[in-house]
Picture (tube, one colour):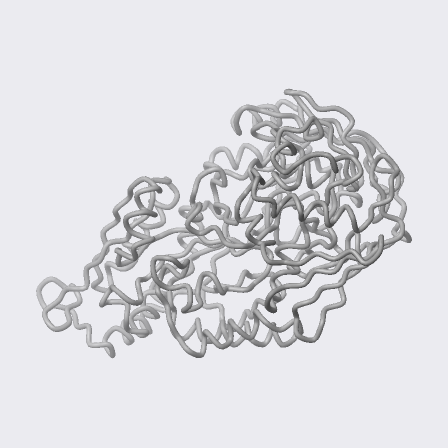
Length: 546
């Protein structure tokens, strides 16, 4: 599943084209509190947070279709496991699973103290029911969510044990699939997959998460603390999510004191960011994302970019920090790495975000590109170094593309920016690989596995390797990280992949955008870490204090 770095409602991250089998809907992030012996906090107060948009279905299997539903599902439901602040998988309703040596069988055992908000114990039947609705041909939710579970056999040998059998080993399965929120079978067993989509349950959801849905209307949702929450009783008694038509109206509510917090998924102007920083009693945080903005270089069809030296030269020539400051207004992390900074698989030593223009010029010279004595434009075998950067019409991406073109000009490279609607960009250029360079976004979810984006099996119009990058060594490292369940082996494979990336620059990663989260300074929130989705700001909500 993909998300935009700055406008998650728009198709920045290639929309359906980049619809990876990565599922983070319903995931719960946490910093280590597990079991019934968690610290008990004294409950206090009411926290009101504004959100842009409104609810549709408070149901984790549909949450990926609507951002507000993601927020509500995060508060109301729980998954078998959850994602930690660096992408590490942590226990949730179940302990970490026992995984077979061949990596194909996952055995989960539910905690004894997990129950639904109506007091009914959670059982393995609930898990099986949830997956059965996802894989039903009549499922009306996100198709990528359903596809992620196709072919997975589900067994329930007893009430507390769930076994998943995969057709082949897939290390990302744990982080991308088993974090989804589980539904109560005892309340929904009579509903078909089609009927579930419009069921009354979606407006009066009962889950097993930290908060219980008390009321829900067109104006706001009121949630009260789950006294029996398996990770510890929440410290704030009541949370309200108040719905606004758009971000400007939500921001005005924040400035007027009508709400205590606001997660801004959209990019902000410098003036607006400054204004938010001046709101009395508020704290502004900018949690990092795992999605990145990348300048795709067509390794296969663009003659310029078939040479590793030329691609690396472009990567070294770009001043990413300048782009972060000018285009993102500081709300991004400059990086050249295809593995997100701050995650467990990230190897800082191979991240080269700082420009090195002299080295870039040397690489271009070694590759045979010489400056024309009159024009200054690089020329090789009679061909000038001119190419087009294609992107969609989003103002931020257009600005970044123009800045890249400006920075390349002193090297003798002339880049022209061409923007079009995203649907045209995807259909006519990206999918067909009919482009020289293209600026877009990529989000591979909570697991670092880069298979869909960069393995050679994904080249061609049917795959998602848009750069048509192919390298035997990179393929072997990606495959190794994808098929072993040993985290240290995976970490080493991805470290080596990052080393190969830094040497070959298959494309040019520019930056990882940040969210802007403004909340009352009186509310004490644990460190957010990497947010694989905006809803994960509530990952440790049971530990919030007011």
